[in-house]
Image (cartoon, rainbow, N blue to C red; front, top):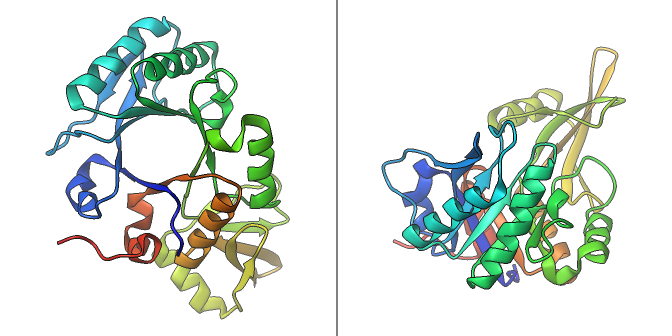
Length: 262
């Protein structure tokens, strides 16, 4: 596969040693914004060093001031020699988080650090790059990325290549499916013996089956579909992709185009 300019492995703390053997930049899924707000780091046998700091907001509650939190982030970047910050904030946006992302974008730019934010914060953090997830249950990935490029500019975009495996009851009332493990997906395919098709719009594989009177639609990724998503992104001028190591470790040889370094 013709690679994007920059592939980054997003790595949980416990998989740092294994992921490091691939020779790609690492984004450390080891930080969260907690009450205060304050920055918290996960305990792990190997402390993160170099690469990008990834911060989630799953446990952030209440208010507070952005400045103190941003200073904590910058101190940790200096101590761990991080090259930038990824604000992967996935809960409902708040004014506090908008302040944090906006200020971090400015501070990182002033210090020569990269800064990435999740899509809802692309407007509040104009100095940061914006991460667009590739997972879709409807519509078109190309259309989705084109809309984001028109809104933010293709040069500001990066993609997060989640590996999808979901079972949707038809009709789906809210567009959400039930997540499947790799083993569950395999068993479901074998049990129903359905033909597998590929959606050019979603850039994902799918099959359908009946369970009693209920129809089901199963959407899933493999190396080929992830490659297609990255090619679509690259064709639109998007040069950076985050690959979640925990989901994609068994596909990396196909995606990266080389074997793991010994």
